[in-house]
Length: 387
Image 1 (cartoon, one colour):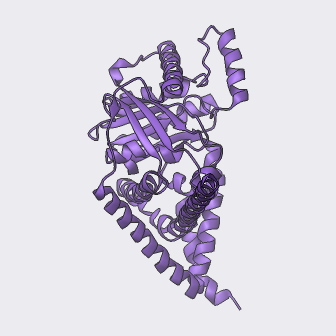
Image 2 (image 1 turned 180 degrees about the vertical axis):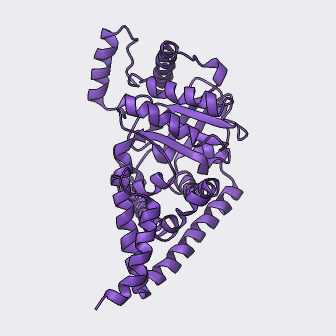
Image 3 (image 1 turned 90 degrees about the vertical axis):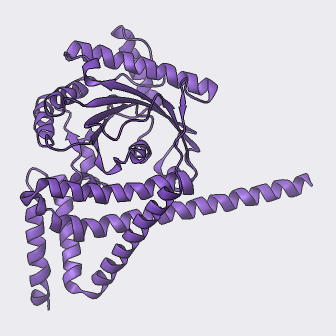
């Protein structure tokens, strides 16, 4: 009987693993196909709208990105079975004029797990990440996040400081924006912890073992810019961890990733934050010492030391995700048929994606509207020039 039980358990585990892999591969294919087709046939031609009405262009991109991440939220929680647990006094407020999310960076795959609170607040399409400029050059991912206008930093403080001011000035008329940054500047790895603990010891900073030393200047510059453009901005301090912590993107895609994602939330009004550089540095250090304490607590007790917020997905969320998913599938099928049957469409597709990649690699030299005009010329004249 024991042998039979073990055999059935192994078969069940194998079947569940295969099912998880199938779901992950399906989602991966959906992501690649949808990103390619929507970027080439929708984002590129409509980029010219930005020169006419920047607000309308941003609202359209926010809708498309929000629809995609709505599908991702439901996929992670319901199909991949990741249980999200939220802690604190509140998740946030959909009426916030502008909000900044500061979070620890446990892995390099944290981005897909970030949409779950903004989704519940109706702000999933308005999320903008602050990230290093190298990320914008990644094919597929780079096309979308460039169109979504993430804030890319060069890690050159003189240039970045000017860029931050100009960037937030361009959003002065936009409300309900959500800005996300990782003050540690990199994800957690064992050798980084050792290096940072050495730095902490040498500089009189409390020793932290579950987070890295935060860098405060970027946050200070962003908060300073928002004091001018969005004086009612609110800061949300997230502390995030997984059970178990995923080792690679493949484990997430295959359904073998974390079973639980825990997020602790603290809320700060702008006037609760220091306005000077020294004060912001101290605030960041104190916030990360608290994160380290909370992460130690959850490692020992299985949950954060705060009120648990119940916010499950319901049937309406299923209908919304299903509607967007079917909508994307319909668009993919229509554009796929067009691509298969038309030489003009093939030339457009290749020209648009090549132009997009040139833009994300050389943003200072290539403009998407110029790419759109060039692609139009190639697509319409190409069939007449081909033998």
